[in-house]
Image (tube, rainbow, N blue to C red; front, side, top):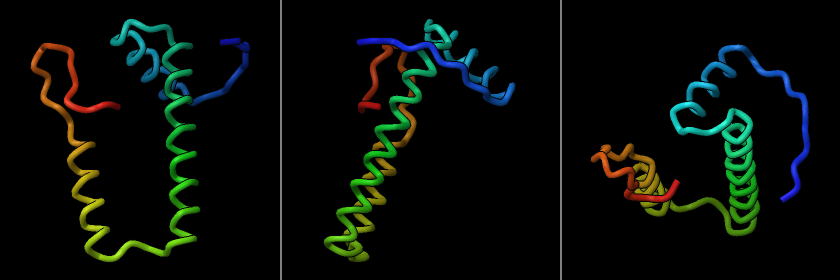
Length: 91
């Protein structure tokens, strides 16, 4: 993987939060921000793909939407920390 150095400008509060999060995870701020950007890019690509699919097949029925809402509630629910460091679902 090649790396590039860039200069970014972000609000002080955002940088402070990123530094704290990176420290909690034992990462550099650069690595933490890189991972956050990668995740955000994947989410954006997924949203674009979903919009393209919906443009082709139309919106979901109320039943289909209810299923999606329930599924998303399940997979995005915070997992209780049992001290093992393991998650019940992937991030």
